[in-house]
Length: 302
Image 1 (cartoon, helix red, strand yellow):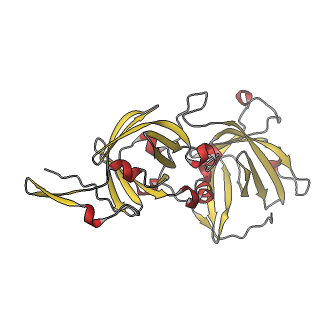
Image 2: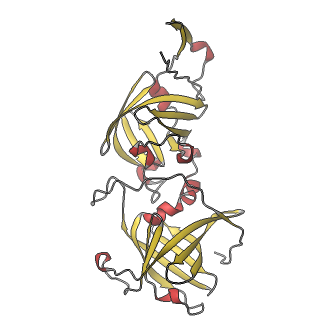
Image 3: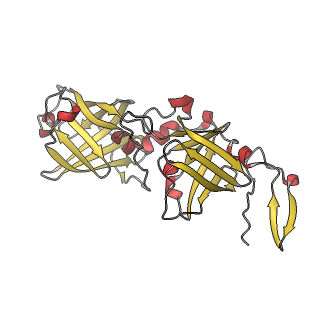
């Protein structure tokens, strides 16, 4: 017999005197005084640490979420980087219902259906959600809304931000800067593992865009500069382009091209709100990843 432990060590609810010991079939089971519901609601939101995931299986609604929240039987999730910290007052969107039992969490998801997960506590602000069907564990870190660093999550996952619009349309090119081939490219599209670009005229309907170039892209962290990212576009047909990547707002990015000294602005078209979009999109899966780091200094001062 394998005994399942729900060991409550969460800040604010741990009281060592509230445990009783029950001997059952010669195995010691700690019987907590606090319910699974109280554990899940002890923090406003739980950040899904996707890099800590163990197992080769998948729980789809956790694989796609940056955060989840448990509020009076309703499950909320931040599945998008666009609007994170603002959507649903920071909790995200309503994605289904949940029910709790002793050490278990049952989720009735709007799209993915029913899942039953075991709940374990790891430390004062970390829980493990274990799916026995796939032998997969997800680790979630608890936070209060007023102490959660949404900016860090945004910049740490900026490659997903680039993928959340169907296309990015160039809306500005600075007069300052040397002429270069990128001047003629008016649309960019980012997909997992590759990008495409087009020289079609601004204003072209998304469905009519003809993609002229394709290649690989990479987002880099910059040493000692958490708010700066760099972007390389490795064209299959030519050399690489290197940019400093700046986020102006939730729908506008700025690409600074150090080689020519040119500034470009792109605006997102076709925002995909995962699980709520008109096309029925369920969202791209998060993967274990870590941005490589560049040792460069920002060239553009803004």
